[in-house]
Image (cartoon, rainbow, N blue to C red; front, side):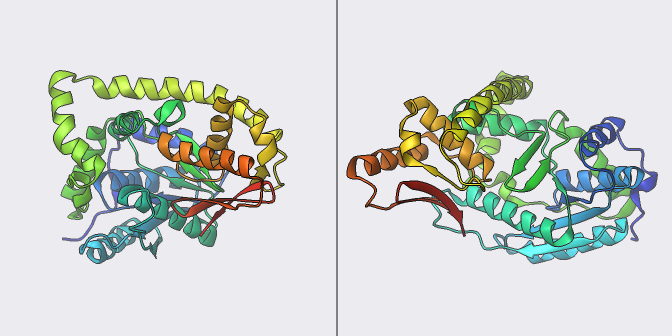
Length: 340
């Protein structure tokens, strides 16, 4: 069955308006890309973006990251070529290898590899921002997972509608949108075109934290506390407001640490002069500004322990703290961050 272009579909106006507001924060006619996994959520974003970007004159790309974690990955990539052709939007694909021994866990390692690949694709295609299809359910699940991991106030802010990850701008226009709206949109397109989203088994695979949450805990929450998603997304917004204040404090502290011009290193002695809570705060701020994943309490405590031990032993002993693809080292009293 041949695919019908989606331009004549009646999209939910809320989806279009939310995406339009996100795009309005960008320079006029700047290129953007949808991070397209092929699942329902990202396909819905691709459909809406194809229409909205045409009206707003933002050149649009589709980016697909091939993790190779499932045997179906090659089939998904070929399937997405069909969607890109139907919508007349160029699709760029990048293969990545997910580190199995990074210490982050397979989910976090895959996520980090994905963002690195998206950044590479953005640079190669001259793309200003990546559009991500996270919605209300994703946000609520993220808050719950971070709460269970003890991520603290900054972590409970969960995903931001607009954020920087290194040099890459991320836009999540649909954090307040219920996933049912996205499901209805993709179902309508599938019925009209014959093109169906892929089914990613990781979404319900209980070996992964989010899959276990969806399969085992969320059904209980839905039964006993049906409004839990709205409650947790409100908490995320409140935590983001608190985080903004803490960021202002951390930014001020960061400037006292004699940072290098690129923000990749700072003075250990200056860091030692801060109170312990502000030491932790400025480390999180630094890692976040450089695009590293937010470390949990135990991981951050280990870094702080090593930094204090360095002070006790002098600057002869070199620190090495690995966090996914990032590493923190200390040489001659300068604490530095590198990746790769």
